Length: 72
Image 1 (cartoon, rainbow, N blue to C red):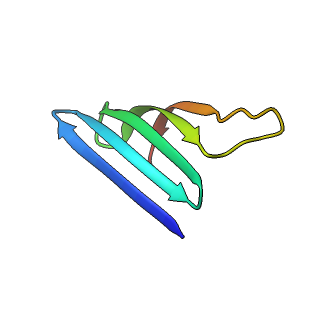
Image 2 (image 1 turned 90 degrees about the vertical axis):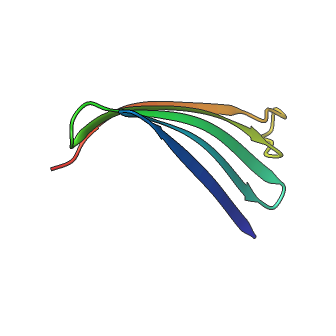
């Protein structure tokens, strides 16, 4: 079973978010922020942590991303 919960709160030109994703024993919790530079361009950043997912080293893991996006 896959469960997705994702919520964003607008704060002026910025948007703050919290996401939680679950599949079996694996869980990912993510915090994100987005800032609109214009109608079609924005900056975004997110960081998250994985739990219940192990590789050969027993590391559960964390992840991050930073992006600048423009739609055409």
